[in-house]
Image (cartoon, rainbow over all chains, first blue to last red; front, side, top):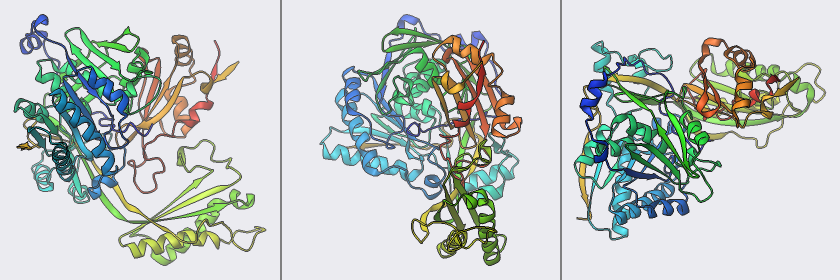
Amino acid sequence: MMRNSHSLFGGCWPLTLECEEPGERLGEYHFEKAAMKPVTMICPNGHLGFAPLKVESFHLGVAANPDYVAADSGSDDVGPVPLATDTSASPKNWQEHDLEEMLLAARKLGVPMIIGSAGDTGTNSRVDMYVEMIRAIAKRHGLAPFKLGYFYSEVDKDLIRKKIQSGDAIEGLDGRDPLDETELDASDHIVAMAGADPFLHLLEGGADVIIGGRSSDSAIFASAAIHNGYPKDKAYMLGKLLECASFCAEPYGGKETVMGTISPDGIDITAMHPDQRCTVASVAGHAMYERANPFHEYVAGGLLDMTNCHYEQRNEKTTRVTGPKFIPAKQMRVKLEGAGKVGERFVGIAGIRDPHTIAHVDQVMDWAKAEVLRKFGETGYELHYSVYGRDGILGAMEPKRDTPAHELCIVVQGVAPTSELAEELALTGTRQLFYARLPNVKGTAGGVSFPFDEVMRASPACRWTINHTMAVADGLELFPTHMIDIGA
Amino acid sequence: MTRKLVDIAKTIRSKNAGVDKITFDVIFQTEDEYKLVRDSGALTRETVADLYGISQNRITDFVAFDPAYAIKFSILRDRPSGSAGDPDIFGAQQYAPLMDIEVPSR
């Protein structure tokens, strides 16, 4: 399920929520049902760039004349390395492929194109990269001039430091403690998660194309619905349903286009691929995907409550959703994501086939660990062993770790401040498996097999340092917007 | 008489829910199968904690989700996803032990 990869709010925000009085709600959205025209949008990819969109269903979606073409390009599923090192997890040409398809379609239709969380992480460099890609695509195809809006999401450490020092707690999510300056300093890049506001601001400014920094998936689509006068309840629900493209359809198949239509009657979600359908089961099943709880979705400024949602099959390919509720937060808080580099990393691999050695694999690893300890001391590095064939995937949660397979693969990771040290560390931790002194072993010419007698450089070891929320004055505060003319 | 969960459920999956949690979905084709498992006592906060050898307070959510015929729970990771030594960055293979859960027939 890795293709769908943008869990945003797995946890519970420590938000203080208030329920609006019905009268207030009516006051805010005093629209006549008849005055609201349906708005349609298509989403071709649940994580733009991670794997290319499928063009057939996208072109069917374009042929249905949607009012918006939109997609999310971000994820925290790709791990902390891209954010910590300010890189993308996806090749540039995959990203450009999808941007090109979407831009050409949107300009031909004359409707806005909206992208959120540019380049996996939504850092400033990723936004700039997408802006330049749009500029290059437009030039290559000789597109008529259009307005490009974009916004940044990166947050300056000093701003956060001042908040911490002034006692304005950066509250932890998912059981984390409030952020302290040590963890702040361990972070190399920090992004804030935008809600609908910066998108909405750019739409109101007349943007034809929007490239967003880090943003909630659902907010990308919600902004377009709000721009057309729809209340946040339905707008965010529409976004929630569309954000993963065809993951809300069946049979399983990613990167296919789906279409969402918001109207006073509800939200209709339709699969565009000829062989896919949006069913009650697939749409409801998607509502709970990648989040800790199927009823709640937290975004900047509030909570989408799906507890009372009703799902109804409208026709073979379309399911209608009604009954979502948006509960505004008393205090506007935005989620922060931060990641930092821990050290350089090298990886070694060893195999074991001798049943006696397999039965005593912990002793084998203890020998190698002791050799590392003797050479490198107790601190200043990390050494990790994963034993595939025993508990390499679940670790301590593996119920069957006492019944290992007939052969094992040990993956060794050495992490240290410099490449030289990390390489020597990983090599010691790997090669000493070979020399482990195991009582009663029959094979005395080497305790493990090596597919190659070396260790390999891997990406730097990084970690998620920040999964927190910060109070802001409004939904635009951390997200400076810009508007430029392309092709003028 | 018991049947294994893998023979009853349509979908059994796990996936990241943010960087600090893994969420598990068990989804059934029919309401009958859903209710059979939901009411059987075989898939509960207690049985899951026991199966994975973790304390119950690491299970942050455990809900039955009627519209999808689904049972869903979430576990706090022992370290954030993608930290060195984390063998499952996406949390995508953590569901497998659930397949062997024995569900009593009605």
